[in-house]
Structure formats: C-alpha cells, structure tokens
Image 1: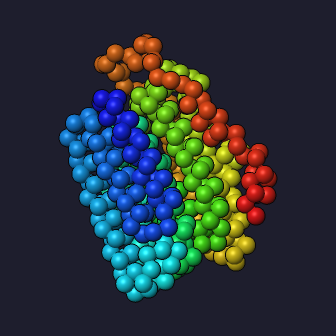
Image 2: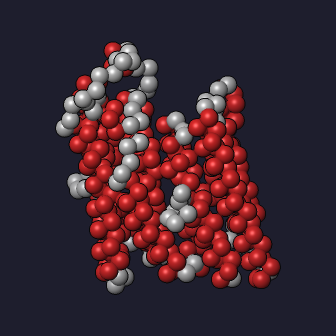
Image 3: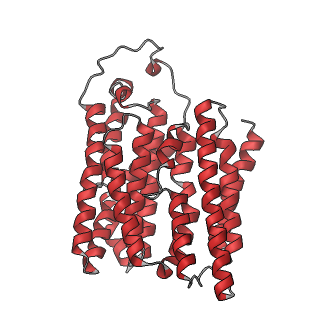
Length: 348
C-alpha cells in the first residue's frame, strides 16, 4: 500500500476514535464510529484476496447495521426527551437498542457471529487493529451510558459472552479464530463489571490490549496462523516459544502473570456487590477458556511437528521485522501483576 494512503487511513482511524472520545453529542459520536469503520475497510481489503474481501464485506455490513441502530436509538431518544446529549439516555427503548448496537459493534455474544469469520480473513496486523483499537470508541460510549442501561441486560451479555468465548474456541484449529473467541470472552469480563466499577472495565481493556498485541506480534514474528505450525516454533526461536506460552497463559488469567490482575479484581468486585453466583459462573467460564490456551501451549512447547514442510524453512532467513514493540508488550504481559496494589489504590 502507498505510504501516503496508509498514513491517511491510520490518521483517520485515530481521528474517528478521538472524535467519539471527545463528543457529548450523539451525532458526533456516530460520526466518529463511521470514520473508524470507513478507515479500516481499505486496510482489511488491501491484499485483494477473496477471503480478505469477503471479511471486509461482512465487517462493513455488520458495522453499518450497528451504526444505523445507534442513529435510530439516538433519534428516538432525542424525540422523546428533546436532548441529543449522550449522558441523557433516559428512554428505555432507545437504551436497549443502543446497547444491542454497541454489542454488535464490539462483538459481544449473542451478536458475535461476524467476529471469528472476519478475523479469519485478515492478515495478523490488521487483525490486531480490529481486536484492539476498534474496541476503544464503542467502549467509551458504553462507559458513558452504563448507568442508564438495564443491569440485567448487561449481566446477561457478560455471562453469555464469556460462555460463548470459551465454548467457541475449544474446537478451533485456526489461531485467528481462537483469538476472536478469546476477544469475545474478554469483552464479557469487561461488560459484567461496567455497571459497578467502570475503572475496572478500563483496567481489563488495557490489559487485554497489551496481551492481545503481544500474541498477534508473536504470531506475526513466527509466521504461524494454524495450531499444527505452532509445533515448529521452538526450532525457529526457543526463547520466543517459551515467552509465547507464558503470554497465552496470561491471556487465560493465570497468576503470577498480568492477565490474572483484572480477573481477580473483577471477581472481588462482584463478590462485594453480593453476586456470588455470577462471580462463580465467571470463574468457571474462565476455566473453559484456559483449556484452549493450554492446548496452544502444549502444541507449541511439548510436541514435535509430525509433518515435514515442503516450503523454504522460514527460520533460515533473517527476519526484517522490528522486535522492540514485541519485547515491550511481552514484558508488560508477563510482569505487571506486582503493580496491582498501586492500581487498587488508584481505582478506589
């Protein structure tokens, strides 16, 4: 892609998200979301592969549907209340419609079906943008309006997403689909606590972005998109294979890694709110997700690939990729748990 075009598209992505962050008016927020969608579409279709074009089409249609629902919900709310302010979402119909639209935007269950299919058709770097940056603007709107949304609806969305994210990833062999289901499960954790402690949602979103960035960059570095090619990673780079196993366990939420921190604090908050059954359900769904992360770790570090590859061995060629961002994200993914007391002090 032409570097000037790439610069325009990436700055448009930044502009769309910033516009939604800064807006207090529904139309401005909607405009930011639309700029975001239109800016990422050419990035998704840049390889002109039929799968990439199909993924772009699916993504555009779902995002356009969600944007139309947001516009309809905000118009209904303005019609009923006479205000376009984001904070004044007092109409129950508009509130429910708006929640459904944003759930579709970020891929929450039960409106998650586009997410694995779209991510599977993209290259790893565009998939990284879709899984991280594209979640920021919708989450800004959800956090602003969480107090006006029905708590039961948010709880149902959260529990369903963690369940679907766990079950859906169990039988997958494609790493991008596994990461899509991982994204759905993490979104569920963020939504479940947003009505009680929005700062914990931001913490969970931040740690999710760090861990997912580390995972995508690692897969890009080792050029793997399927489980059976993971088994050759140890011979390319033993150090990368061992850190990747730890990154995956951090995504699963095992102590003493960074991924344990948001899950621990969210479970603590749910228990404080006298919701032990929901807290227990969330902890059990985390175990389902942990199973497929362990499966990836097993394939990567404890097995030797049974098949011989006919292509040129990728580890013989020098890599031209920059390793500094990968190193920084992996360090953050593995070592941020000790700062938990500081974060707890800041979030109370």
